[in-house]
Image (cartoon, rainbow, N blue to C red; front, side, top):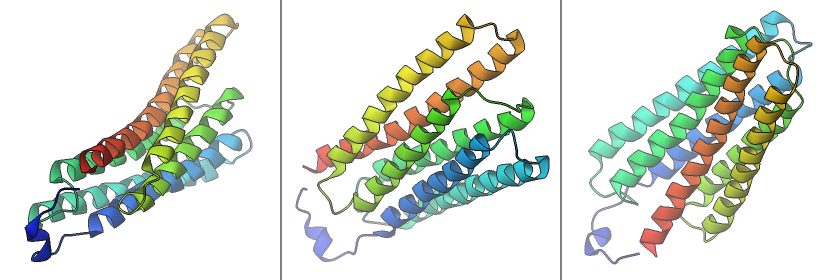
Length: 214
């Protein structure tokens, strides 16, 4: 990292890392609820489904509030631990991960889905695991040399999700599925892949920041 004499005289605001960790944890908490919803979709009473969707929405709103807090403090902080553009980009991109997840969860209600193909469960596993890696990444962001290793693990999961998406779509069009279900599940698969892509992109941003600091 480049030497800066001002660092000796002006404190740097370090809470940004804590806030971004809170954002990432909101995603993981929502992904856990979503996984439980998917796993038990065919047996959950409607009121329980509604409660889970509401819990995901509340976590999404919490993440939105954290993003706003980051932006507000960014405008009030003279010296930041990393470039302020990078902090802004990270805050927005982490928030986007849970935005997409919340929108996906709402589609289960909008589409009145009662039963899911088995591959959806594997997708939820990938979403939760890559989210947990994002949390680990934010925990170690400012003091660890493990960023490249964690980001590499995230990218492996992103590649697996790409392959899974291709298989899901191929299976959807190869089988004798109702055309309405083709439309519904294609949208769901695309949203699940977008979630994984968005989390992986957070890892790429962090990797890029570390390259600049080297």
